[in-house]
Image: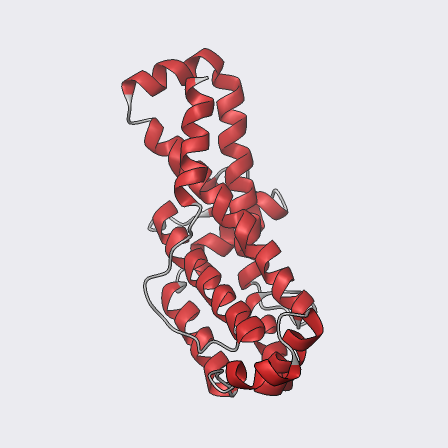
Length: 218
């Protein structure tokens, strides 16, 4: 499961980073001083906006498409359940010993504090994401497919019905829930830590946003 866990990170983290890049850009448009600087290289920033949103929506499509033979979040959880033994306390002990972090004697005390999951833990992760991603399979997946994947339409407005709209902060809520579950699975696999469910966050958010503003002010 080690590679599958890494694959989930590769799938979701770029989407989050591009999302925060897009959010920073849109928030900069409300600042008159930033707008003046953006207008000095407007073609670049239009391309920048289009590129970041393209990466965000392609991440949405991959994470939520739920096709049988693709790597997506639900299939990842299914693999975790099928390979539940890899998350056992014995599995954690073996990995700690092989990595050289613990010897056989010292790992016993460590493993006595480890948590051994069952299928309900991974089902709870699925529910956690579903509750925070309810709109991703509607308008957002439509735009991801028809605008960014297949170019059936060339704008969000063309792809949406009259009563539909998009919100970057709804995407943030959804992607952060997937990221949170990635972190829980990683900790469970590597350290035998029991999953917990607080307010999801991405620890490098401010770093991404500050990077965009540095580019604007360059």
